[in-house]
Length: 156
Image (cartoon, rainbow, N blue to C red; front, side):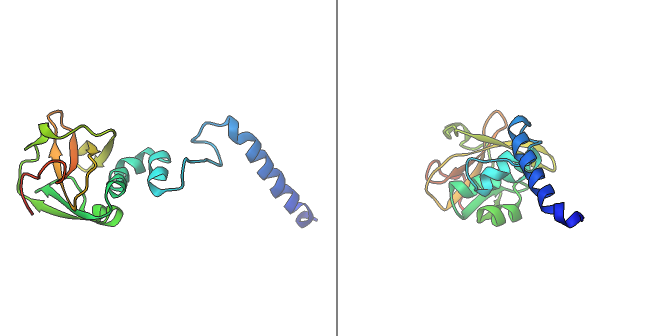
């Protein structure tokens, strides 16, 4: 007797979910829509913790698919995440990340990156080069800069 009404119960549940969705806050909605289906968009809009951990690496991939990212020794950049999500090889070199930081143009967006030593604000400046490097602005914000926009303080 129950199996006869099972399909009707599923259909009624689906209709109720669809009817309630427009009235629920985004975090409680059973069905959510996004501007596009890219992984970057999903990471930025779904959960704040996921965005803070992986958003930077996905934005790096969107800015340039692959290349070399030169960072100072002991940097907060996770080499495995940079290679896995952005296709970047991370090379640690001994240099001062504040060198040239005042000559770097502002980026239109910035992201909060969750690190073991605390949160860091990151922005990415677009350009065309396989060599990117990590710069530090006076306010403590870090910027990933292509060599074509501002030359790296060191060569890899």
